[in-house]
Image 1 (cartoon, rainbow, N blue to C red):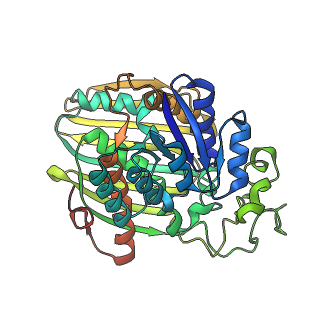
Image 2: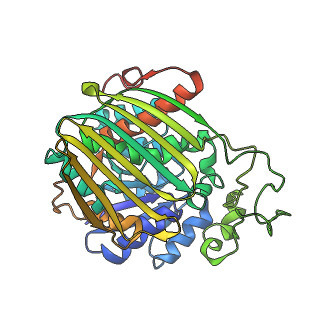
Length: 405
């Protein structure tokens, strides 16, 4: 029986971990404590999971009293390193939501603590577990394009999902590392996993073209805004979907879930382009647009034998997409098309697959869905290097940020 504690009682902590563990994995694991800097949210998580999870107001006390096997970290990204390192030093493993952390200094501190303590860090890259990503991985392992030459990767966030990052705590670089760390760590991990090579150097540009700009209909937050009847970005934080977890918990720490997407406080980018140089002279051109009309991604991998083209959209041109498409083109113009059906469940069924692996140690993992600290480092460091490149206008060498990897 795994003894677990949870730090961070927000939406992800509740839906990805607390509820599935108590409802589906009670024979394999038990959560013996939850801590959140917002005590109201921690109490709510305990109530929503049957009232059996003890709520702690002090993280160190929780570690000392419970002596867990592992600590699950689902806090604001800027604090991941603090809880991961404390867990390792207390003799526990750490299971961290992505990104593992937000910059090179914090990343090096985690890696050093893991080496020093002999404990283990797992980073939950659920994007690996989707059937679509798995099919791409299988095709690459089978040599679909042979030696890889280049990668082209476009990621699109629409003005529903994308806008949400500009309402919440993510909208400050100091909290999330911006979308190039918080969001794109998934994307960079997928590419690293597909091609099985490490990044070497990063050059990037980034700007705010859509959100965080002066607007005639802006205000501090949606709930009190004079323009809420006219703004397409209005959300009602008193709606049942938000009320319990956010509005009812505001008095504990003053956090607003419905910040204005045009706030001058926003300092993350919404339009980003990267050039990433990998080992073996492989290059990647990557872009992330957080204000697209549609949601999804397009990936191309070029190699000695041909080209793999993959795309998936949640919806496109107002039409819901029921499957994903992968095409493999060879040098003789032959094309093989693979249609991968979409699964139900959160993140296309990926969350359930990953939870099964995390909770049941004997579950086979031939695709290496469960990622360690090195994968966590090699994905986040691309985004961290990109932020440095945007700020300085320079090419950033990965070895200068992570000299021991």
